[in-house]
Amino acid sequence: MIEHPYFKNHYLNDGKLWVDGEHRFLKTGKPLRNFADAFEVEQLIRDLGLIARKGFNNISLNCYWHHFNPSGNGTIEVSLEPLRELVAEIRAHGMFATLSVETYGVGGGQIPDGFWSDNPDEIAVNHEGKTVADTEYGYGAKVPSLFSSRYLASSRSYMRNLVRGLGAENFLYFETTVEPQFMGAQWLDYSSSAKSAYEEWIDRGRVTDAIPFPAEFPADETFRLSEKWNLFRAQTLADWINEDARALRAGAGNAPLWIASDYLDAESFTESQRCGDAVALLRGMSEIQIVQINWSWCNIDRKPNLRAYRRVRQVMEETGRDWAVTEHMTINGADYHESDMKGLLMNTIENGSHFGWEFVDIAADRDSPSTKPNDVLPGDFKPQHFAVYDENWEPKAPMKVVDEEWEVWMQMVQQSLHSEVSE
Image 1 (cartoon, one colour):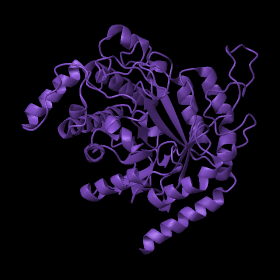
Image 2 (cartoon, helix red, strand yellow):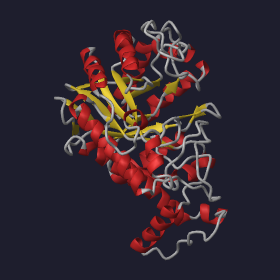
Image 3 (spheres, helix red, strand yellow):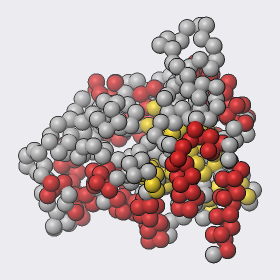
Image 4 (cartoon, helix red, strand yellow):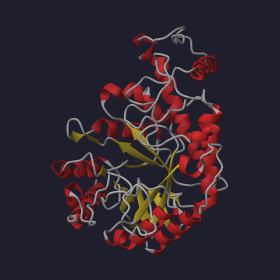
């Protein structure tokens, strides 16, 4: 049992959230906003009553590094007061707040321009020796090397300062950066700092059968797929996640915060690119209490991705960890079909630990004005195309299966919970 450091009678046990002795299933909404922008924060505050009435009991606030720290040095450079007000209003509406960060350059997040101005050489390098941008999701953002000490120091300074500024006591749990991975569309990382780290890893572990780092580009497939290189990459990912978790806790004076991390185990043919050795990655994630499986539903084959759950369970059994097993972005408003929903949700009930579901983006699907003039009315601003609701806050077809059948789904969760107990 893991007690919450601030909330009385809240604890994690058997991978589930318990409040006053009762199981609490989270309906988490992740609104994608610029939370450094008072206008966007005020818009969300106005919508909180409606969101609460839709049954959401947890709001995850994804705070992008470049919004709060344009210089990229890790300090908070805009007022946190609007965000503090939002957190207070979330709590006043009877919902939990969760703090998430996005400090990587893949999937929509960006590294602050100021960081690149001061550190132009801290970029990741692919197996052809070329610097890397986010081609996988099409954003084109520069991708930092995970072996860059300057990147790691600055991003973690941002995390510490953000937690310190907002008050860790206001949040149910914290998330490390969205989708920690090396990328699935390119082979990473072959920078000079990666070479140095790999060679130090070999020397430190006295590894005698590792293939030497390539002397020239492109790095051939024999090296890219070699066992020790991918073990090294997996352990590096785990270290990244663990140290980010410690940075979040440091912002709370090293309080035992609950930390969640995404585990991106997508298509089998990109596994080595993203994770190195996927099981070694999971084994190394020692600072995490909540594992959020990404690609719990395969969007290519339109069926459950059971491989990810099985690996998580394998490592839990090996290590004795009592992880809450849930999903990153159970659905968003763009990638899922109405016909997917029953299979998708049943998959999470049967294979997760009944911690909850996450929906992205909690927003009405309205057009964004190119500017925000004084006569823009509340509700006229739409932050992302991922919205799971239409312009009138009516659920789109996939979300309708959730909202309009919520009680039925909760009955299924409880039946599954009782089945576990009887076994």
